[in-house]
Length: 311
Image (cartoon, rainbow, N blue to C red; front, side, top):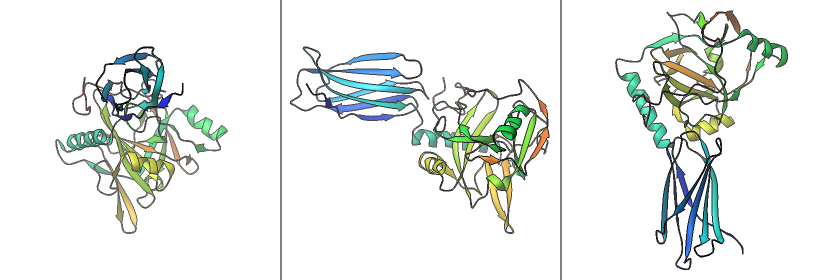
């Protein structure tokens, strides 16, 4: 017997997958089974779906950021013969409405006490162990290559595992670039104009989260028209380069001045490879373990300021 394709509507958020479908008058004496598999853990959930007449609806609770394979099977009620089925692989991630709500939470936090503390900067920086920079110099022709965004921040955000990039910061410590870092003992400095040119780059809001004490904002920077830029334009929130509350590039006498909000930690994810030639390097003091976590640090899920669904 040929197995037909079941027409199922599927929508999902960071917390739930919602399935709906209908059957015709001719399809009698049938039942449905849902099989949901977490692709990371392998855990399988099987649900026998009760008879709902001709219209069927099924909400499924999920774990944010996880990928699931969902399969709906229609079988004959008497002999269990497979008649039709549908399957889809989905990731429990933010909807556009959820991302917008998170963005509004971020703006409220930034504006809560006073106006944003925008300080002028001329350089961004990236701190890594000396061995990291040596490997790029010796084996990668001085080209620092992007890599897949890890699981840092909200697990259900729309950039984890979706785009490649390199993290930079512009935050000043006592009005100077930092002399120590938990990420490594060498700081690379790069002129802002190289990665924040308002006529060449677009900025996007991607995430707002905390690790108990410190709140972070993730801003993605793309070269206009690239694959990463097209993805971010479709899925993230585009920021005005000169007026946003995080990091700004403001035209000034045919040049640009750059400002960063020093009241909150701004993570800048730049989506292009960078040639290290011409950039400056400074030895600094490594704190903590002196390197970043391979898979990222999970966000604090109990914070009511930066979570949509605090636990």
